[in-house]
Amino acid sequence: MRTVALVGKSGTGKSHKAQLVAGQNNLEYIIDDGLLIYGNRVVAGISAKREETKLGAVKRAIFQDPAHAQEVRDKIAELNISGILVIGTSQKMIASICKALDLPLPEKVINIEDISTPSEINTARRIRSLDGKHVIPVPTLEIKKNFSGYLLDPLRIFYRKGKQDVLITEKTVVRPTYSYRGKYTISDTTVNQIALYAARRVKGVAGGRVTIENCSEGIILNLELTIEYGMPLRPILEQVQEGVRNSVERMTALNVLKTHVVAKKFCFKES
Image 1 (cartoon, rainbow, N blue to C red):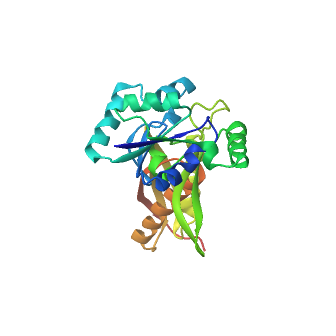
Image 2 (cartoon, rainbow, N blue to C red; image 1 turned 30 degrees about the vertical axis):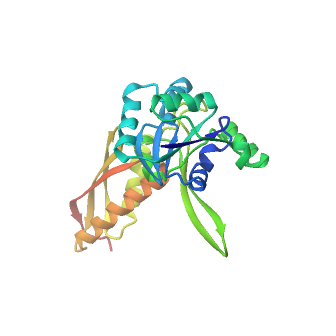
Image 3 (tube, helix red, strand yellow; image 1 turned 90 degrees about the horizontal axis):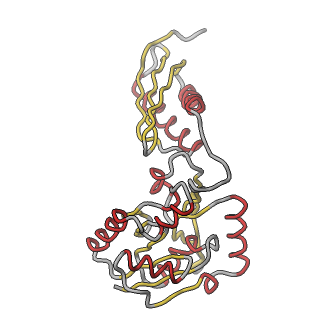
C-alpha cells in the first residue's frame, strides 16, 4: 500500500486542500481527524471534532481508542486499499497514525507550505482563531449525524480546467464540540416555532402543534395539523412534510431523521 502524508500545523488549511492533494497523487482514500474518507463519503471512523476536549480530540485523531482503530483497520482491509493520504500536524503524528492503523510509513511527505500560499495559510489561521471554524473534507449530509446541533456550512470548491469551471469537491465547515467560544444551543420551543411556521405556509393548513423527539443522531418531528375542510389531504401533508424538514435543517443545522405529519382535525375557512 502507498502512503502519502500531508503535514501542517493546526489551522493552516490541510483539510481544505486534502482532496486536491489526494487527487494529484492518485489516492482515493484519506485519513483525517479520525475519519477514513473515500471521495465525498465517510466510510469509517469517528470525527475528532465531536470530542468535548482538545485532548480527547487529539487522542481520537491518532486512533488511541482501540475500538476506533480496529474499526478503521478492518475497513481498510475490507476495501483492499492501494493508497491513502494521511493528514497530521507533524511527522510524529503521522507516524503514530500509521502505527495505530498498521499502515506503512509515508513514501512522500507534503508540507502545507508547499501547496498553499502564505496568504492562504494566514487566512486559514485567522478563521480558526477568530471564528473557531474547522473544515471536514466531506459534504454536510455525510457528517450531520455526527454534528447535530453544531454550526454547519456547506462549501463547494471549484477549480479552473480549460474554459469551464469544474466542481471537484464538497467540504463542510463546522465548529467542533471542544470549541471554547461558548455553547451553541437551540431550544425545543424554537424548533417548534420554525416547524409550525413552515407548516402554516402551506395552503390549507390552519394550525396545529409540534412535538420533538431528541435522538443521538438528530431529531424526529411529529406534527398534528388542523386542515381547512374541503382541501386535498395528501398533497397538503406531503408539502408540509417536505417544507418543515427543509426549513428546520436549513435554519438550525439539526439532522431531521423523520417528519411525521397527521391531519388531526378539520375546520371551516373563515370568509
